Length: 83
Length: 83
Length: 166
Length: 166
Image (cartoon, rainbow over all chains, first blue to last red; front, side):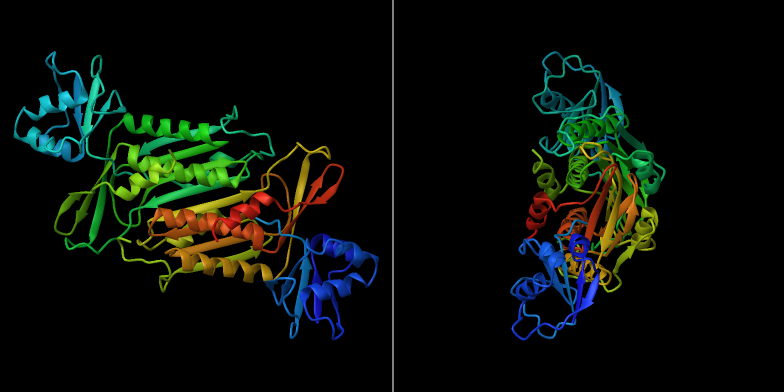
């Protein structure tokens, strides 16, 4: 699936997007975040406060316990500050 | 003092403004309204529900018990419907 | 508040305007007059009130509204409402324009513009000005329908809207 | 409601627009697009959010804001907020425009316009859209000051403002 990063999550990881094949045990947004956090220093920094990082599945806001099965595009980003 | 009338108060009385010399016993807005109501049929019709008619003394909203001594201009009108 | 404004602050160069006129107004020009050339405005709210078509009455469709007003007092009373708004919210500017005369459906009646560092203050001050203007500004609407002319009755809902700011 | 509208009414020819763009917007043109040629609009409310100068931080004055957004989701999420507003208030039209890219103090960031038969609905829908947009639309502000660049932190006050509509 395609993973997107925005704002300081993107800056810490050092990329805007990547294709990820998550292992079978990774079933929810929170589990995906934990899986990504283990991929390296930038990732660990981005997800060090997991409750702060928000997610969207296929362009809709998703809670940490939302299942990721069937998702085409999952995004991680800080709390929004538009408007 | 100058008395002004607006909207249906003006239409019932049949004039926009007039100069009135109120007798000494007429001390408040409510007493002035009662004095005016006795001046003829149009006036009686305009003031037949005295609680509905609003007043302003020198261009500021005034309650029925407001004293009229020293006033230059007193206006009577229906509840406002601007905006 | 984070930027040091407190209710009651009166920016020395604030722009506050009240106009009573028969001519139409230009909302864009009024927004520009409040915010052009200054970078301390974070939020501008405008309210435009229009003469709305109405064919629900048995006396026929609404042909026009004629707005009667009390010259002199109208400006002064709305000026007092603007001063009250300035005392309650940190406003950088406010403009109120109220038309008088005969207006047909689709035409503008009233414009309120508020500018503030903060969106909450701009929204609340604009709603406050409209609510109080409805019940306090000396204007009266004569409704012209196909078969009759009637003075519009004041609405209890407007009194209730004004009361919520007390 | 006196004119027969009930929350959830969707006028068949209502005009609802969401745009995400780097260019500036023309508030007057957007008001006209909602209300021109129709006489059922009684109230139009606009909210303009601007990039506000700020020299209160120790890192120096604000030089610019850069708005990053999630293309695709930004339009869709604001579209969902507009649908929610239509379900809650009798809106004839609504327009939301949000800019992205680098903006300097004094520049427009966001515009919300709501049109309704009634002033209360127009005011509430505009405030609702701004409050929810702040916490739900996928935009992030990078603050550029004289000596540093910082991502703006989300405000608890914005969460509280969004909560009041639940």
